[in-house]
Length: 360
Ligand SMILES: *Cc1c(COP(=O)(O)O)cnc(C)c1O
Image 1: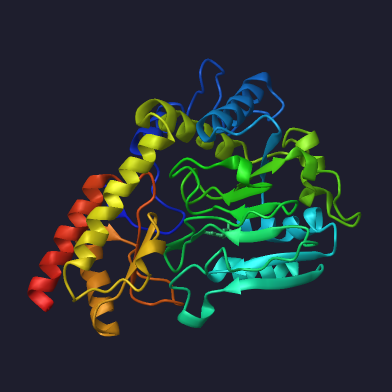
Image 2: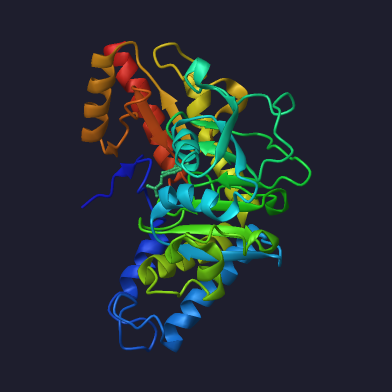
């Protein structure tokens, strides 16, 4: 059996060391005599798991004491609805639309209030991030919403809006834990876990305490950050397995990688190999303007749709899977999250060179 290099945008690769630990602990976690999949979420052994998982997120991401961390079901899409229900206290919010998910989030929020698209990069098919300094935000907006890394289009914010008195809320589903974050700059950071953290089935939100307690009274109880956080994410049965896996990945980041500064260096080195190759030839083309290129999702096209298809087919046969681009962009996309080893990117570039030699 050989494990493939999986370039899926999500769910995606997990660190091999983490999978091995999960495998070793699958039948019996510690001396509990049970699998984490079987134990009561109210048991002391699971309480220790959830508390340590939360504490490790706080350490790894350097989350200040005035922020709460919660585990939510419903993925990032549920956060799109929770954000306006909980934080749109003035009836208005400003959204930057820089890709698919930020557009979906803005549309969802528009059900609940006055949403203004403060800036959009749709005019050039989301190949850049609009200039922050010249973007105007309403002073009475309840919050500003951005999607920090655009998973489908492969772009990322280098700087983020900072408006006095207007909290910034960011979807970081596809680049959280890939590098250090100044949590202080944000009112809320949320992310689905299936890209860079854990198996699918959960989202994590980091919420500044002063923003809690103002949810619309009709907010469903499971979508109320304040109510869930007041019960330490155990208002109902949480996604116990996902919380456990998140804890293992945080431990890997702390102990095997040595923290997010190191993770960033590794990610930069990996992405550089692929972008340097893309820039060195003219068979494949990356459409994103250079300053906004994502470290996590690298998009590229070949000269034709037929060639894209052939490339993906041959790549899959050679052990490089899930390289097909999203239908909104076409071509290919290599998602190279934290768990993708440098060797996987090196091998992909070798394969691309060989492909050009035989088909170019
Ligand atoms: C994958 C992704 C989502 C959607 O996540 P779900 O958990 O499937 O709802 C939202 N935003 C971003 C940035 C993503 O990468």
